[in-house]
Image (tube, rainbow, N blue to C red; front, side, top):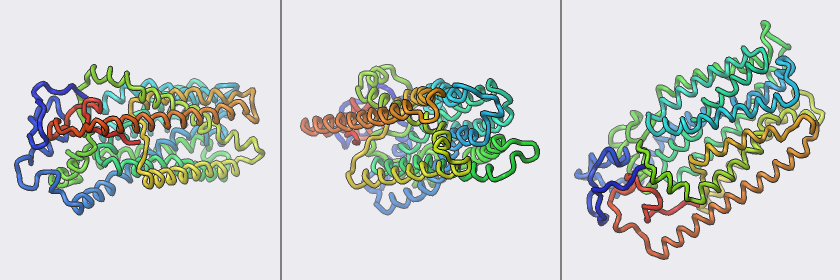
Length: 447
C-alpha cells in the first residue's frame, strides 16, 4: 500500500480521479478505461450481470482453491499418517525427535512467510502459487528417500517453506474476487477442506494398512509420500495453466465481465493489488492493537493445532485401538471440523457478523505450530495430560482475542457513524486508491 498521492485533492463524489499507475490500485485501470463511456459507472451494473459474473468466478476459482487447500493440509499432516505406517521405527526416531519433525515444518513456514509476502505483492499471484505447489509436491516425494532423522528433518523444513505462501495467497485471492458479504462463505468453504483432508487422509492410511507390509520393497509410509507428492505435482501443473490472478486480468472472463468483476468489489474499499511498499503504512499497522490481538489469538489456536495434527494418531491409539481403527476414528475429527465450519458460515450469514484474520497476523500464527508439538512430551505418554490442559487454555485465549477484535471494530464503526464520516470529501475512486482504513474515513470494519 502507498501514501496518498500529492496530486489528489479533496473532491466530491462526482469528481473524477486522476490516474497515476504508480500510486493507485491495478483495478483502477480496468474501470478507468470505461470512465467516459455509456454504462461505465458502477450504478449501471444490474443484479443479473453481477450474479452471472459471480457464478463464472465461483466455477473457475472455488474448485481450484478447495482442492489446493485439501492437498496442503493432507500433505502437511502426512507425517501423522506416516506415524501409523511405521516411519518412527524405520528411521529409528526416539524421544522428542518426532516432535521436532512437526516443529521444524513451522520453522520453515515462519522463515519463508515474509519472503512469500513480498512476492505475492510483486509478481502475478496464480503462477507464483502454482510453482510453490509443484515444488512442495516434489519435496513430499523426497520424504520417501529419507534414511535417517537428519534427512527427514531437511525435507520437512523445506515442505514448510513451500507451503507457507498458499493460505495468505488464497486470502488475497478471495479478497480480490469477492465482495465482503461473499468472502465469509467462500473462505469458510475452502477452509473446510482441512476437515475433508483429515477424512481422506484416514481413508488412505486405512487402505495402506490393509495391504501387506511392503509392496515391491517399498514401505507403506514411503508409498504414502509418493502417492500424495505425485498428486500434488500434477495438480500444481493444472493450476499453472488455469488459476486466475486478478479479476482485472483473468482470461476466464470477457473484457466486459472483467470490468463488472472489478466494479463488484468497489464497495470493499480494499482494491486488488498495489506493489508499492510504504513505511508510513507499516508504522500505522504497528500502532494498531488489532494486529497484536490477531497475532496472539491465531498463535494460541495453532499451539493446539500444531500438536493435534501431528499427534492425533498417537493419542487415539493410546486408547487401545489398533492402527486400522485409529485411522478410521481419526476421520471423525475432520468431519467435526467440516460441520463446525459450516455452522460458523451459517451463523455469520444469519447475524451478519464476522472476524477474518489479516495477512499480517498469519506469519506470527505459525509460532504456535512450533510450540504445540513440544507440549506432547514423551515422558507424559500415554495420557499427555499437560498437553491437553495447554490445548484447552489456548482455545480460551484465542476466543478472547477474537472477541476483543470484534469489540474494537464495533466501537470504531460507531465512532465514525456518530461523527457522520461518510467520505463525501473523498475522491470518487478512493476504493481503488492506496489509502489505509485509517485514511479512508468512509471505511467500515466487518465484525
